[in-house]
Amino acid sequence: MVERVAVIGGGVIGLSVAWRAALAGHDVTVVDPSPGRGASWVAGGMLAPVTEAWPGEEAALHLGEESLRRWPAFAAELTRDGGDPGLSTAGTVVVALDRGDAEQLEVLAGYLASLGREVESVTGRQLRALEPGVNGIRALLVPGDLAVDNRRLLRSLQAAAVRRGVKFADDEVTDLEPGRVRTLAGEVRCDVAVIAAGARSGRLHPALAVRPLKGEILRLRARRTSLPPPARTVRGVVEGRPIYLVPRDHGELVLGATQYEAGFDETVSARGVRELLEGAERIFPSIDEYELVECASGLRAASVDTVPFIGELSPGVLAATGHHRNGLLLAPVTADAVVALLGGAPPPPHVAAADPHRLGEK
Image 1 (cartoon, helix red, strand yellow):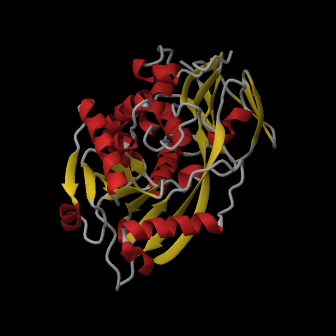
Image 2: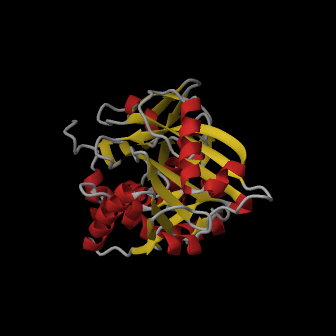
């Protein structure tokens, strides 16, 4: 049994690993200058491997579906330990605005049907009856997708971790070596270090081909004169750019997300805000009456093949990073895999595609 575990990174992956590792009896310290923030704080909250799927990304789809199956039990246990994370079972609707989009929907529907996934195609009129105010000539309903309130989730994970005895070192990691994690203020001794530092993970181990991929989101709130947010998550493509609208409690709506290479720049651009609002207005015109509450950006931890890195990097060092746009979705399966490895078990079969050495790094 490993006694001391240092988890580098306090986002959704790091906090999930820390909580589950503490539950398994390990002495856990999370090392992060701002736990509960980062990319996880500005995530949309979609748990949607099916509507993220596309031919050629089967490994990411299968891993995502394995984690999705674990989410209800994960959320129930977290509710008991740290508070309700706001899991939604309303599903997703994928909207086609024009004939070209509708053709792409047919491709996606056919692909998902070939995999045995449940989807339902509806007309624009049926769409408007289901989701008043949402535009589209056709749409796909995906009832199995879930969503979670990312900020409630982070607060719940922090509370659950504290309840289970996890310690927090609010400091920046500068280096690590077997048995110790060096920080600006000193070091944290450990038997195993788990790298869950998101987009900055590549700086901590040469085998981690992780790069930052910037994404911007807006948070809005309905007014008395506007339509309420849709009941389901709404996804679409506007002029080639993917866009999503995720409802929250109290009439709030999360709108995202831009995606582009910008290094470690976390500023919000005027162009990004304009593109998001213009795209959302095409799908849900009433949004132009909403109150704009927040503009924010985060850095996704992107891998070249959209599959994360989960497993042993070297003796005493594990990876749990590179989750791209699916960090929240993959939190349960990642945490369970890391806890299994900490307990001396072999890597679970369903995470084989996430082998940290699959790209050839030694």
